[in-house]
Length: 510
Figure 1 (cartoon, rainbow, N blue to C red):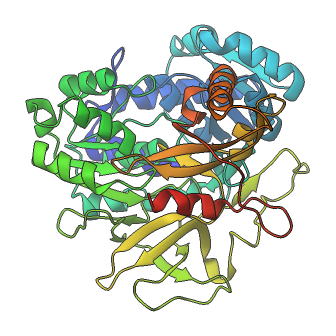
Figure 2: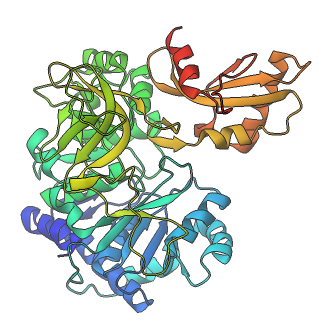
């Protein structure tokens, strides 16, 4: 099979060539036009030397071209890899060292950065620009799109993530991963080809990629937001394109709610709102429903599974919970020994069994031709996958998120390593040591809290001021702590390790 045939060509058959496939600010494409562009791009990639199994990396803003190129890479038998436009030089070099791409396709604004990183990490790759190579490909005659035949288990696309280690790695997904892409939309949301799906997350996230596959499979319309979501850009997109399903993250919903947008006519026309990426606080849930007349359906997904795993539904929902197991998904909660937890209200580690579990991970250490890595702590016997989340199941069967099994920090769906924050403060004279943990703000949204131990003789306020100043200089805004607290010392184990759970507990009792 080929995922492009299963999704795009099926959507073309279901909806027809003139039905809108992609709507965006600068360009919109029908199913016929998108199919033609995928054919042009696939032929261009093959002429440029991309062969089955080769990776095609994309550093682009979210226009119809990145969707067409993602599909074209898979149609040509290659592996599509979308990369974050926020990646700095060091992170991008690490990503390219993992991907080892045959081609890197960029928007003009990223060309200089990509060229510099490729020189150190991927010297054999061809650098292509959207305004040159892709523009030339669009001018060529479009032949019939005939996706290259692939085995269902062949790799189709990678999702880049920092995971639980803080270091970039690629999550490898197969062509047959798309077989369940539309289940949640059709069986839970009742979506049809008449629907317009708008995911505010950038295209390199699994959240948006899965939404794209689902829209194409159903013959529905995918609404794109070119850059990172802001109140203004989301509002303008909703007003202009009238999506029927909006998929976003709690932080964006919070900003939209604060801006007074839910009761406006454009937002009231949205049939369903979906949230994932982190737990949706009940205050946002209740405030949104009161203002818009529609609930936000909170759920859980992850890069390794792509699609919704747990979710609230239009008919069965509970504020503060992630919901129930979605169609085709098996769930279990296990204790530290791996034994299933059956007592309601008991917290344990969430494990999932479903057909879209990834093949494994790719890192820069992989040998050529080696299979993807499948660490035992994540890939369990009999097809179970450990998500790394702590969960509790209540007496009515609703699942409640209780945090991460590890110490990684996740805010607005983006992972941040505590060590990256702490290491950035090394060498400051007023600071002895620091520890970053995940807390919640006054309405329940996740935020990073940094504990700072002042150096001997140093003033606490001075230490906090120095920490804020340094982090504002070296970290992007989304990785910076939102709260800083001076403490006399940090709790530690007998072997000297910081007891982060005690710092998190300290936040909960306030």
